[in-house]
Amino acid sequence: MSKDPLAWTIERTIPSELEAGHSVLAELLTRLEAENWTTRDIFGIRLALEEGVVNAIKHGNRFDASKQVHVICISTPEKIWIQITDQGQGFDPECVPDCTAPEHIEAPNGRGIMLMRNFMACVEYSESGRVVTMEKLRADAS
Image (cartoon, rainbow, N blue to C red; front, side, top):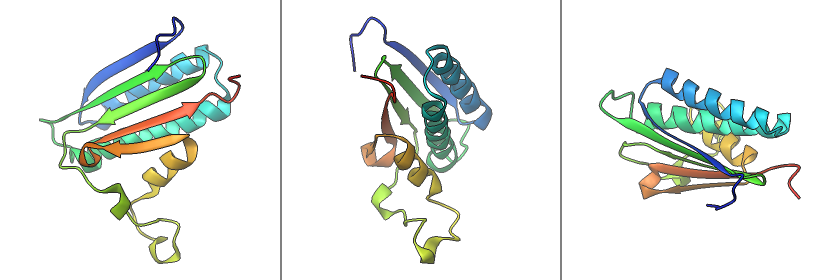
């Protein structure tokens, strides 16, 4: 990512439990607040990370206690890069229906992906959908 001396990394492997995801989220938010990221940026990053981790635990690993989720967050003064990896069977993100289309407005799935794409500058899936990589540029970065 970057060899910037002001960059930092949070890397955690957590069990497929929602509470474990909350601890990673809290740690990241504390760092972003200490570095004076804007409230709007922090809101978007929080939402995207939370959706990504919940999707990995719930849909990827299916709450399987024998599986884990790996989270890496790398921050520089200009941006944050997040990668979430689950041990599930994967999925094709292109096959997830558009939750904003009238025929899918009542569908229970797909909103997390839509939110991640709306709040982050870049969202990409790899390894058959088991890895999501997201990036957000800092609003006040020059």
